[in-house]
Image (cartoon, rainbow, N blue to C red; front, side, top):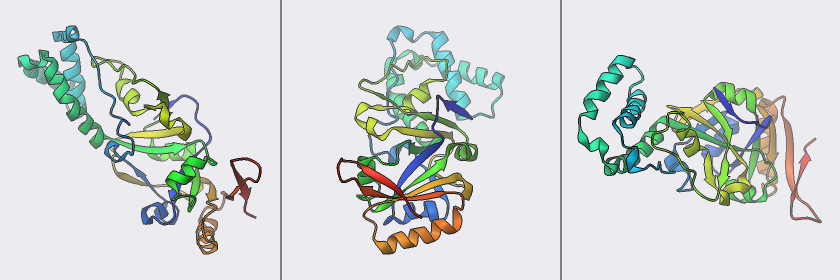
Length: 263
């Protein structure tokens, strides 16, 4: 388990009440860890490795092969990995830049299989997110206790870095930070989301069931019907006994949402 930087105590997820899968967050306590291929941003988690042809030395290639073999089969002993790398390296194609470019797509496919991602935010009153992720305010926003959620899923929890340019991610990086840079960097166009995400190995497209006490807040969208609000409140008040409940309303003097307690 790893925290990347300071994390707010409560992290939020926006959901659409008309979507049956989104309903399951509160009806069945389900959280879905998505693979990269499901993201709505084609650049998300697709930042390419970069390298100089001069870096394709036998030593660097061996280290990269060793890293790859460890990921492919974690059950291998160190001696087995070393022997396998020596055998693979006998093929001269590994000194070709074309080989590493061709294998970048395979690496992205590996990310698809290996990493599950749960996207969250520190904001509960963001107008754009209410519009984009709750079917235009016809849904809800649920706030989770970051500690309980992280202990359930484990993995790595951190804030997204928003950049104008793609970060330089060296192919021959022995720090282990390459995957984090790929998975925790997005375009500045997405900065309004103030995203935090949990990255988990071998959890792509996996569902986690969270305990009721993980829920700290639920905010209802302003365009839910009264019947829909009643249906949601009936569920959440019976389950999330320690949570606080709110509804969002339009401010009358500024372009912002007010979050009002439901008594």
